[in-house]
Image (cartoon, rainbow, N blue to C red):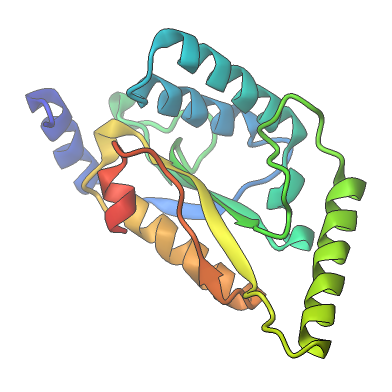
Length: 200
């Protein structure tokens, strides 16, 4: 439930310019992304030791970005910004404070960047080529080709901005981009607490 303070903040946000969403820029946007991922970990309904482990993986992921979210790998990462609430002024960049994010990842890229080993892009591409060759063999043998699949990752908006349509627009963008890349299906994996994400 939103507190009275949060409701007041939302009312102030609604009176300001609408949020903006754009592709992430690397390495400039890494601090924004890490800040959002830390907020996500704090929000997760998990024990402290689990959160500590997850945060370490996220920090490693941010260091490796864009990784599998690079457009050349059929992926992407987008950030949402809103004007700062502090004295009506913007924090940092002119576009304001980062309040949401979402990523797009091809499911051909098997190994997650969120593992303890550094991302080996050459191995990822080798796996992708192997999968495509297997699909060609299936077709020659009269089998069915697997669908070209992707998944949205790291969909998150800060608690104080929920209800403003930020998450919905982020999902619309990631679906639009998935279609542009030619994906045939999108699979969602998330925690049970993320009711809004599941509805989207």
